[in-house]
Amino acid sequence: MSSAWLLPEHIADVLPVEARRIEELRRSLLDRAHAYGYELIAPPMLEHLESLLSGTGRELDLRSFKLVDQLSGRTLGLRADTTIQAARIDAHLLNRAGVTRLCYCGPVLHTRPSGLYATREPLQFGAEVFGHAGLEADLEVLELSVDCLRLAGVAAPVLDLADARILRGVLAGVPLESAALTDLVDALSKKDAAGLAERSARLPGPTREALGALLSLYGGDEVLAAARERLPARAQVQEAITELEWLGSHLGSAHPDVRVGFDLSDMSGYAYYSGPRFAIFGAGATDPLARGGRYDEVGAAFGRNRPAAGFSLDLKALAALGPDAPPAAAIQAPWGEDPSLRAAVRSLRDAGEIVVAVLPGHEVDASGFQCDRELVHAAGRWLVQARAPRTD
Image (cartoon, rainbow, N blue to C red; front, side, top):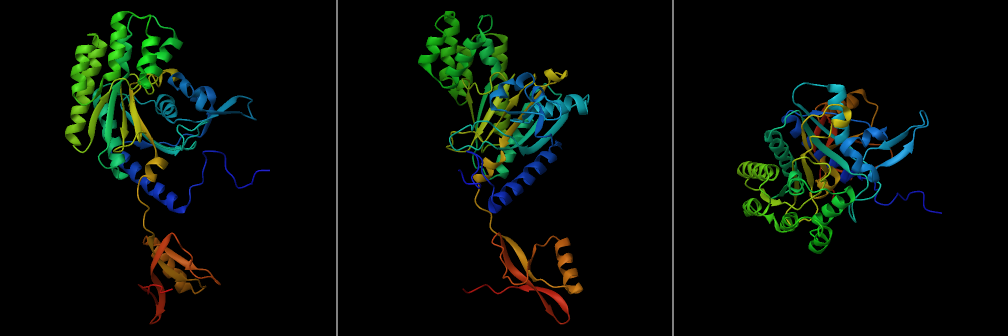
């Protein structure tokens, strides 16, 4: 028999010090999004499965927990991503004519972890802007994501830009079954030259050459110049390259500490994104801290196909990168029924102070706090004075 206190694999409790760090970061990120004009939403964890997997959300099928609703008999899903829910809210509940900016922060559940040490219960923070098709929205989302990482103490972030339209332009006019396309995308994502050559062997020569070129098109600004020469001169491809150049230039000039690069073979979320997409890494890291981009088809299943761009990140993973926060300064107070004592404690708490009461029969036990002051009775009133440090 397994111990009752054991949790499922890749599921963990969040203990006080870590929980405090996560909560403080959550507030900072939501305040930053609010400063950009984003409104907070809180969608439910549980929805009808077809809603959670509608449209571009179908790729989440294998990652979504499913159960049967005891009230209706319908299949429900626990959300694995919040973007689809934000699109539903924009399309059906808000139904605004102009630009809508939404942000959120809440847990999502995955049937499998994304990595060896990853959690299956990320705390997803994200922001979405609906209703604007121009690059201004893409740049705004990029800048907000960089600001969020900076608030978490991520120094010198590395930005990788790509665009889903490039591969679509390369393959334009080439009939491919869904499975064959999936295999090509997989080989490109893994930068598997041998696998790509094998899977593209029956394609036209120019298409094979362009696919092979994608594998080497990663690096700095020189990548875009090479892409113009080596990739087909089709409008879809060239427009994507021009837009990547615009985004990289504008972000780099406003945020010189960000190292901007391009990886045109990165196919992460290929079926999901419709235009520019990005991933942001910490210096020397291999796993991205934030992902985002443009996904104009996200609301189609809800009857409102609006332009959309956004990003998301795992707040737990981001908070884990920062140093432990020092214990919060607090005031130690005796417990008592004296109305004047209780009034003094309430007044201090109303003023924003942390007051830890020493319960009868105990010494103060507040390992998450540093009681550097104490509430004492002197000269007929309750006063706060510095607390002498313990010598034991």
